[in-house]
Amino acid sequence: VDAPISSHLNAVSAASAPFVRFLMTSTWAARRAEGDGCDFVVGNPQEMPLPAYVDAIRRASVPQDASWFAYKLNETVPCEAAAASLRERLGVAYEAEDIFLTKGASSALVLAFSTVLEPGDEVVFQSPPWFFYESMIAFARGVPVRAPVDRATFDLDVDAIAAVITPRTRAVIVNSPNNPTGRIYPPQTLRRLAQVLTAASEEYGRAIYLISDEAYNRILFDGRRFPSPTAYYPYSFLVYSYAKALLTPGQRLGYLALAPSMPDRERMRGAVLAAQYNGFGMPDAVLQHALPELEHLCIDLDQLQRRRDLLVDALRAQGYEVHAPEGAFYLLPRAPIADDNAFVEALAARDVFVLPGSVVELPGYFRISLTASDAMVERSIPAFAAAIAAAGE
Ligand code: PLP
Image (cartoon, rainbow, N blue to C red):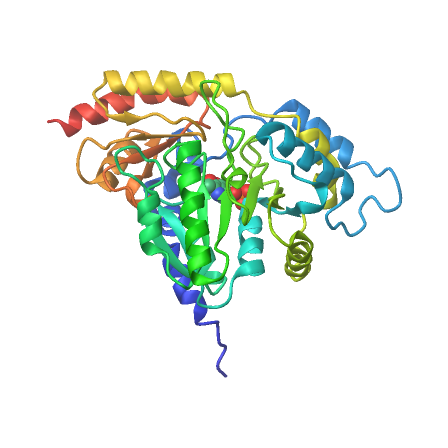
């Protein structure tokens, strides 16, 4: 008998193919388990978690009443803690009723798409993108549409976004602080984006939503403040993950939040809830109970910044051209040869593993995750020097 698989998955798989291929077939994939290399590939922890994180999870695992492990929806206590944190950090009047708890930012993105997309609706995202935007949009039966960022400054190119908007555009994803560029989009850019989206929504007679992926909104360097794109445009969703601030991406916790400015908010709340029930993607009870404590924790940003500075200075001294981030935790050096894949392999031969820029539509670059340990950073510096010297020969 035939055992069909949804043909739709072909397009979905094709869209995530470059990253998945790297995950499955690179030298890093083959050798990472050996554990003695310097692993800068993805934002995974390389050291033990924050002790306060472990304590919070331990406390939350001990039942205090008979319903401790009962089905959990968007429970009031964690949603209030999340909303209070957004009010305090972003200066935007988020309310507990507008927080929809999810298994990380990925589930929050899927929830936003399920809430607003009709099949065939276009969703605009920026290139270079996060790995899964294109495949997730396709998975939600939407049509992925790219708009390049400004390649000189890595700021949003609002004109490029305006140029790809059509009557079928239903949403625009903005990711700030950005993975992989580390840019934090400034208020003047966000105001221009809001003007463009407002004008296009009016012209076509239906709202274009802004989906603000703020997974890194606490990972800020040099004392910067984070302007949330959701403060500038009414039809906004905020996507958040606890994976980055706590460096615990396997503990799936995040949320989708409706901006307080969202028109007809009651109706939208009902729609998100309906989408959320079908799949029951709420986070597990233990993480929900722990959330109010987790809100007050964050990895050591001073240490992360010192690591950024040490690597940026060392690589520049060796002759690399390096783009240093304002937020999020990735460095983007230029590969000293045109073929970034070949250069990444040359580094891998020296036990240093990084992500080729080609995987995120940035050929000629490579990405270093600062979540590596200080010991890995120390060990990697002579290898980076040897690789650029060999490239010049
Ligand atoms: N969005 C961006 C920009 C990311 O970098 C990531 C994780 O790497 C995600 C979303 C997904 O986050 P989560 O692991 O919470 O699903």
